[in-house]
Image (cartoon, rainbow, N blue to C red; front, top):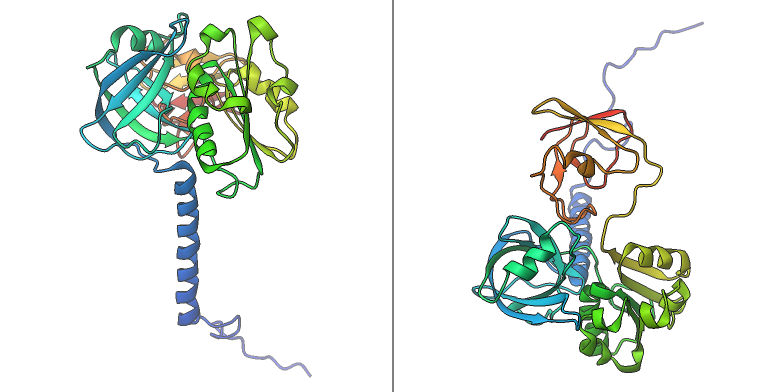
Length: 350
């Protein structure tokens, strides 16, 4: 005989466990989560330093020629008081008198809280930032800076890195973020080696600083030694090494192909990587309705610049955020210097 059982109109409180979690467990869980978050933040701060984005006024208090070919100039910047702390690998944004915004690696001593030191190579066929720094900025010039920020974080063995050896590779002006790293490694007694390369010895900045590291450093120039291979650039490293490299794209690409799979590889390049396997698409500028075709081998920034010469950009590599603009269909906007779209059309709010 079938008997119809009553159907409950609500889920009993304990059918799937307690409706309210144990108060003591909730408190312990929150304390543990807060502790783990503080450890993550402390580790990040210990490696990269404070990530500062406020604008500060500084004055140029020193200007020196740093390479024999006179194409690299160093600048010492001072503020009204102590400057924000920074760690090796950090850079600052410099607002030039024209309004251009450029990033320059800090190459001085992080222990000096009164000045920042940067160096700029003159690039005759660039977009004008380096020429303005060389020709218009002198001792007494007031500048506005932002930062420091760190997109090239450095961790020494035993303090954020499992490597037992450091190997530095610098190409020309790429020595600027590497110098503070090598100085710190030397100060801490960490085993390291370095390869410093460039077109000619006359073009290499900070040679005296680099030579102070003694036989840890190999200096190679294209005019004497030829263009270095990955094997040459990695000379002195081991599979257990952490590699830190800064230089032009061909050098970074060569290292990518040659670095040992077990090695840590950290790098910073001079320019954005080329677009590979791109497809053409269309962007729409919503203020005017202009429709612009972006070729398969170009970024949105390259395509938009002729129509919007005043569009803000700086590093062209995607880490400074200067060229971020709102777009339709994405929640956080788009970096127009690097990002592509999978659709046939995207609308930019600019």
